[in-house]
Image 1 (cartoon, helix red, strand yellow):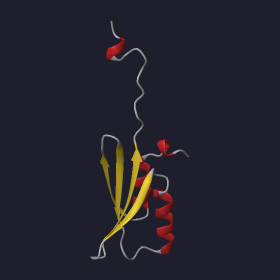
Image 2: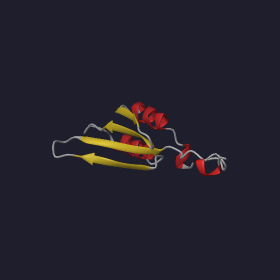
Image 3: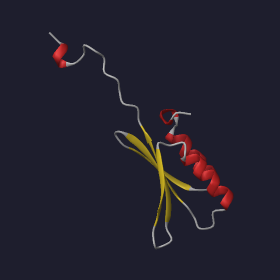
Image 4: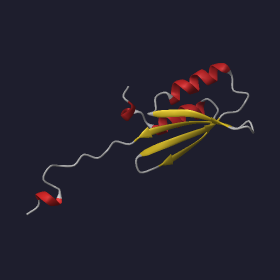
Amino acid sequence: MPAAEVSAEAIAARLSALGLATRVEEHDRDTSIEAEVPESLSAESWRAALEVVAMADRFGLLATSLNSRTLWAVVRKPVPETVAGDGPANQQ
């Protein structure tokens, strides 16, 4: 499935279904999803979470020395197409 077709809300919902607290933020060019990962997360749930975020355009894990782990994903928004003839150079 192309990354452009992946829905950020669907990713967040699937992570929530795994028991992870998620945050979704809309930006101009993309939508970001973050999920706090508890240390008690099972190996099976980790695999499932990684399969979910792999549907995004980018993903990763932010881990700190304070045992905080945040799984993140970014889904790019489509770039709007311009219509030929609508620009200022083409207007008379």
